[in-house]
Image (cartoon, rainbow, N blue to C red; front, top):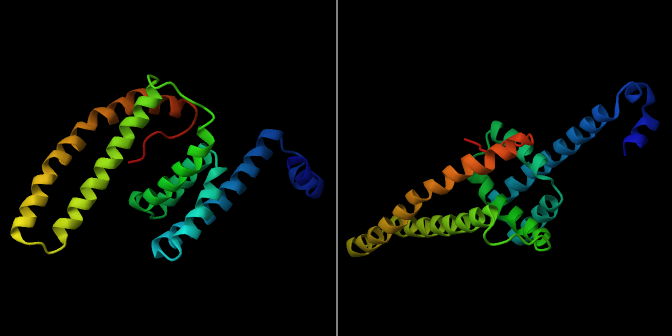
Length: 187
């Protein structure tokens, strides 16, 4: 693609080196991905024809490299998208890359496998927490409210214990991501 651009715009790009040209191409791709991701996020919020929208998002995210996705995510968050708005998109992205990852088996004792397994447990606990909160919000009787509150305590304890998972990510995973120029932790 770089040589094609040079053919069409030799006066503009002729004095650039290959790395500068690749950066421009990367930037253009990121801008296009960002706009497409914004559009998909807005469509996901509307919840119209979710299967079709999720498939479009999956196809887009399947080929987006982690660095581009991280940059786009940071830009979108700077533009006002909340981390919660990314949750569904992240779930779709996980589905998309799971297909790719199937050919790259990681040993169960590998730190990444352990972090992934712990992360899945945390996500399940968060889903349970959301279900309990919906139950509490749904104008239930006092007895039902007490039942829901009793379910809440063990889930909250499990989520508080997840702090050790996050600390291991901070110490082990994020520094290696940052060494490669990828931001490891968004606040």
